[in-house]
Image 1 (spheres, rainbow, N blue to C red):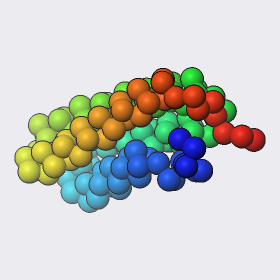
Image 2 (cartoon, one colour):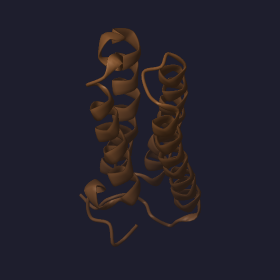
Image 3 (tube, rainbow, N blue to C red):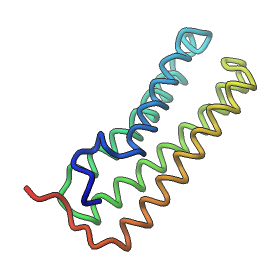
Length: 127
C-alpha cells in the first residue's frame, strides 16, 4: 500500500470506475425506461468505486478493510442487477456475459485486496 498515494492509483478503483461507465452506456437502450432498475444499478455501480475511495481516505486499516468489504457487496449487488437486466431483455446475452466476467474479475481483486489489508502492517494515511 505504501506506493499508492491516492485512491485513483488503485487498480480496483479504476476497474470500478470502468464498470460504472459501462453501466452508463447501457442507459441509452431500453434500460432507460426501467427507472427503478436503472436507478438501483446506478447506485450499486457507483457505490463500488465510492466505497473504495472512502475507505482509502479514512485513516485506518480496519476502516479500509470494512469499506472494501462493502464495495465487494455492492459489486455482487450490481451483478445480480445485471441478471435482472438480462432477464428483462435490456441487454444482450453477449453483453451480459462480458459485463459479468469483468464484474467477477473486480470481485476477485477486491477479495485479494481485503486479504492483503488484513495481513498488512498498513495503518492508514499519514495526515
